[in-house]
Image 1 (cartoon, rainbow, N blue to C red):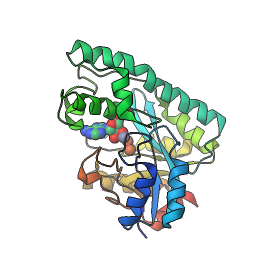
Image 2: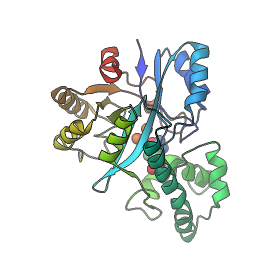
Image 3: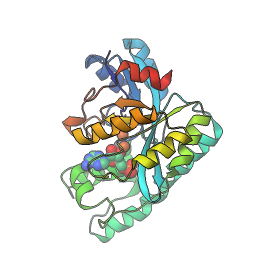
Length: 274
Ligand code: AMP
Ligand code: ZN
Ligand code: FE
Ligand code: FE
């Protein structure tokens, strides 16, 4: 059984619609795929319809933008009630933070000689419920300012670079509790990705487990062998599920993020969802 628990569609910053993504997952030989768009559940219905059509199991998920003591942390959540009010309110605050950031980000780009209008960014964002820096990057590419998304994330749109603007994100522990209260299973995403360093400590993971964390994303394209081994040991120690996934974004990210790039063991999915 082939299970991929972390993918993005055009409802956030992926390049396949939810239905295209599900059909590709089927063609890639996946049996189970989770749709985990950033801060939004808008893709679920379309993905479910396609999953029913092609005979694939869809896990309904999300990747919430959170922060812990100033550190940006991505939190996956699975199979929660998407109408749960406290959770929906917090997701609206996060999406609002994305909107608030845009004018300030565009001011900085204009000052740097790379003017863009909000319309130009929103046009490349299409039907995204959660637009993000990858869309700003796409608009910069369309204008000929840069060559690809990597260049935007290397030179302009990240902390320490001249066009970086922060935005509101949920408190990490609060997001764990909100997902749990909505019946969901929180899983910490790419905790030890190469560029985020190992700032998510074993101690913090233990505290999160106390607060309701259900799993740790162990196998992810941004994790080297050492990170995978370390996180697997911590998950075993804390009795948490170990997940594996691609973090597929269509053509929005490199080929190492292809569907099924990493898989979740069926026993771990069972441990996660019960
Ligand atoms: P934002 O949602 O605005 O915070 O932007 C963060 C998103 O950008 C994350 O979902 C990443 O998957 C994506 N991202 C980060 N680095 C890159 C990159 N080099 N190329 C494409 N996407 C990236
Ligand atoms: Zn993304
Ligand atoms: Fe992420
Ligand atoms: Fe992701």
